[in-house]
Length: 163
Image (cartoon, rainbow, N blue to C red; front, side):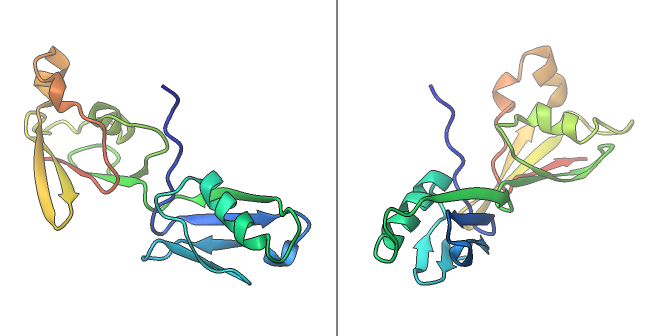
């Protein structure tokens, strides 16, 4: 099917542009309650919506003040869509999820393994609500084709730990 549209998340920075209305256009950060604040319009729900959906909501509200407003919303900075790779990899750190990334791809982006990495004992730490789940990842099994089910798609906030 068609790719899922990007869903705006908490902490993302978006630019709201109103054609011919520069004083109404601005960059805003999505707050922890999932909303953004705009002049004249107050709070608008942004988290969980696509940029197009936010643009539609803004232009609907602006219709009170401006005839047929043309609004576009551009994602400037994605804070919510990140994962982390730590431990015995060559380039540990924070990575953004610009497109679906599997654990294998995430490990490759982190520069591959250091010499003594315990590749059969990798763990993905995933927060689900208040709980943390530990998902095992055995690199050796995955590349042999026996553990392919472990090569899951990384979720925002995941930490991949390579001991």
